Amino acid sequence: MTGTSGSISIPDTGAVFAGGMVTLLLSWRGLTGFGVLESLYGLALCAGLLGLSLLLIGLVRRRRSLGIGDLLVLPSCALFVGLYGIIRVLLFSSLMGLLVGTMLVLLKKVDREYRFPFIPFVTAGMCVEFLLFSGNIGI
Image (cartoon, rainbow, N blue to C red; front, side, top):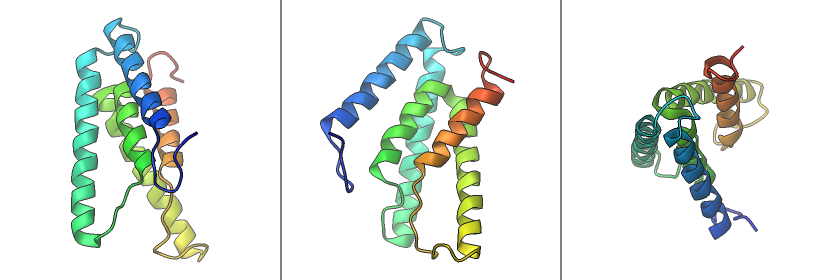
């Protein structure tokens, strides 16, 4: 059973940890298009950016800006796409979220305080990364 309402369970963290280990193994075997170090650099960059954004937004807004799922999924994505890939994923995900959020607020579908789930935008960013920038699947 997965965590609900902001809680996190052992299967959730275990699945993310297992996925990260498999990704590192694939990188080590040369099956991802980049090495283990680039995966780890991507993980470090992603974790650092998440930590910094949580700190800054927490100081300014006095509330948590990202959910638990975001904190688990983004570093896993960083392991899978590497340093440059996670930069592109974060950039595209943030831009897509900004555009969708702005449109919904302007159309008065939601108010400014609505908390959008970020994972769908991360998924879209990962799809763009695989389709446009992956050597194996590119268009």
